[in-house]
Length: 249
Ligand SMILES: [Fe+2]
Image 1 (cartoon, rainbow, N blue to C red):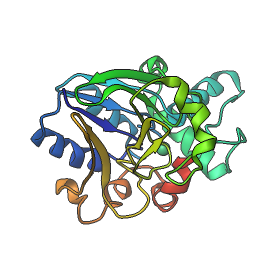
Image 2: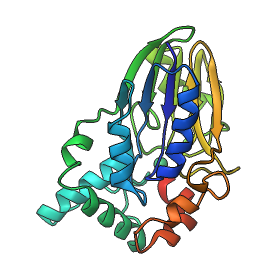
Image 3: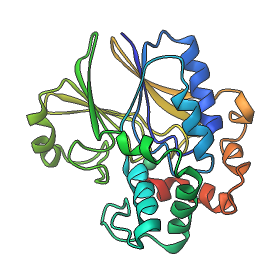
Image 4: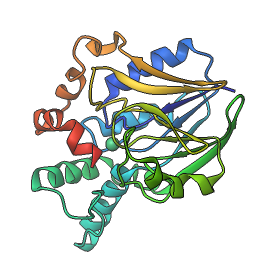
């Protein structure tokens, strides 16, 4: 079995299309969407595309989905109790505005869909064994660690899990490292990556392939920001400028 892992799409439909084009040419049996499909500039279109895929697709939630769900609840109760940040603090007003806009776009059609997504998922993948998927770590969708985080800080988190591979995202930077006996792989971001332009994802089984799609769909290969730019959201330019820092927190 081969599994594609798509993380941090952030409403960037052209980037998702570039990845799906490559997935169509690979022998992919199942897809895992690893959270932070939203917020982003084309939330409805991106979610519809993912919900209509032609092969089994699993979803887990990220801090993005939880922040948007909190906005939806807050619109009814007047109280927002979750902001999706590592510190737990409310982000700057321009970011809150993006959350509110995204929540308005999605409710009420997608609220029950997002609310069903679990925080973790386990799959048995040929050649890899037991693979655990989470948005950042199994205990938190907001904490931040990278390729360079000291191993002794991470060992207590990952060793007790007893899985061969842990797949994560959240920081929008792909990496493949060991923490004790656990292989920890960050899928990178499909729609709002740091570093070289492209739509980053993973192909899992029988080994781990770090993939980057450039694609030709909707001009994505020419300018990764164009898909974002075309969105109707009034603050799309700001969102594009801040995409990395905005959505990684
Ligand atoms: Fe993200």
